Amino acid sequence: MKYRNALPQLNGHKMLTEAGLETILVFHEGIDLPLFAAFTALETEAGAAAIERYMHRLAQIALQTGRGFIMDTPTWRASSKWGAELGLTAADLKEIHREAIAMQLGLRDRFETPASPFVINGVLGPHGDGYAPESHLSAAQAHAYYAEQVDWFAELGADMVSGLTITSASEGTGIALAARDAAIPGVVSFTLETDGRLPSGEPLKDAIRSVDDATGGAAAYFMINCAHPDHFRTVLRDGGDWTRRIGGVRANASRLSHAELDVAEELDDGDPAELGGLYRGLSAHLPNLSVVGGCCGTDHRHLEEICRSLDAA
Image 1 (cartoon, rainbow, N blue to C red):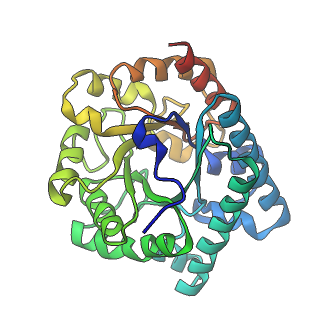
Image 2: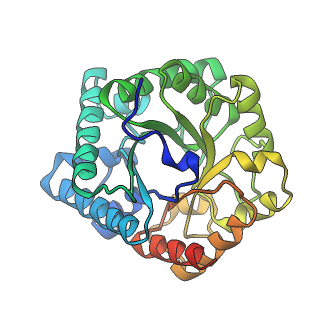
Image 3: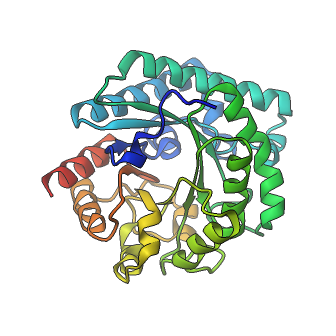
């Protein structure tokens, strides 16, 4: 299969990706998201307009900083388990994926330039609660579970897929295998606790090596998301070849733990300038870091500071 954009980030092209869409919609826009499902916002004019403003602002940051833009589909909660809880059928969910990709195609047509390639990224979310998973799928179970969404993305025109806020190596393995089967580049992004380990208890180094060993290195690269840099920068300082497999970071603005964030009634957006400086420090330990963005609590201010700090390095 030939992709319109052959992942420029793999050739070292600097890429911007997204910020905390869900927290922006809930706390900045006052939009209710059942089960934290961002795609439900597309059902109303106000929600669709809010997502469009968000995407346009981030696209402009990418253009202004000379970066490409990895556009995430708002499908983190659009898998069969979560869809069923929202009363949606497989046909409903596939149509949601179709609409999400069509939105990204329109954005690409409007903003992309030769210096700023735009990549459509089909987003997969964890099977369980990303903050407090009640269980972890085996690799075989995850392979079967994620195959449906991955196949939709490959069929409907995504350039790549990414599992975000993944909580165990076994689920990451399933995602990498499903992407390999569908002949679409796949990325695994792990979430980390305050001790730098996955919610499963696995060290990040071991989780990356486990996925690579089980899949023959099928993942295009790995990422870290939904954790503050203070939670994992000491892990990266230990170094090793495994850090070369990390191609992207989408950190939280908040230093709060997942348990604390889960019950927070107000948004902790941290300090954008400080977060930018912390990314600059992370880059010293990640030789292949080409994709940067944000997660919970971040918005355009944080992305601007991250780009500014990295470009000044």
